[in-house]
Length: 314
Image (cartoon, rainbow, N blue to C red; front, top):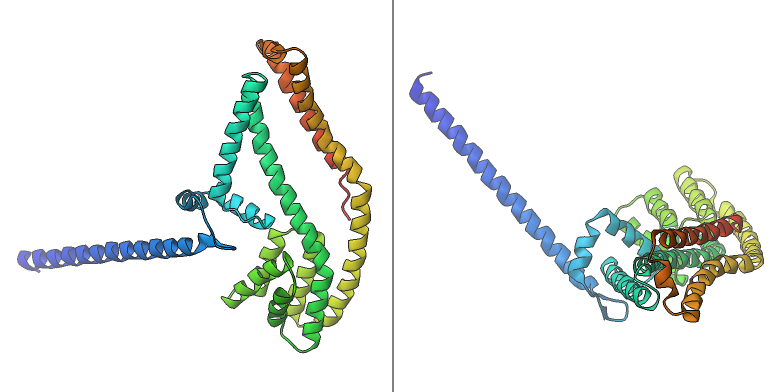
């Protein structure tokens, strides 16, 4: 091969490589633009939600969803059933923390400003946990009726997918909403195991795990799902009554757990009201600041211990 042929071949390969590179960059840029357009269209459509409410802070919400913390917060909010996006919740939380920081700094002492802000973050997280647990309790109370509907539908010859869609239409929230999500996932090609597994992750409970396991095994092995669901319905009814009795017996203990930190915070306002400026003088030294931090830590430990001792898994 002479030198001219080698130069021509090298030039042709270089030009072909450049052309492929330009085509690849063009395809990548077009794909990115189409994806951004799709996300923008879906976000714009999702800004109006439930009763025509327009979503606030859409830009912040999109950026927050791309982070790990934002995705975890989104799952937490989805489990609570609240009509709030991660962006909205973050803005509201920052505003509440700033307000509590200012109130604690002005009414008590400058040292209590950051503590009040941290208490605001803890209170917001506890509120989400409480809302999630309340939604789980409501879902558990609907499980006997859900199992009964699925048993009757499968006994009538309907497929399990169709039975889940029927139950989503007949049951109220939260069971109806959660089953509608499962039905939508099944409609777009998700497997029964994945769709029901995500349901169990969103609303974790022993009763739901038993129901999901029964449905998955029956669907996978082709067993007698009707008999299993009817037996499960009776068991869920009994567990429902037992949980109600246990919750009634422990209501006073649970109130005590929340009363302990409330009394601690109230004592600070009482101390400052009896002698104006007492807290500011107390937190003016490292010893006083350390005593306050230790006191709040002890209140937190007491709250956790009371909650742990009053937790009875049924």
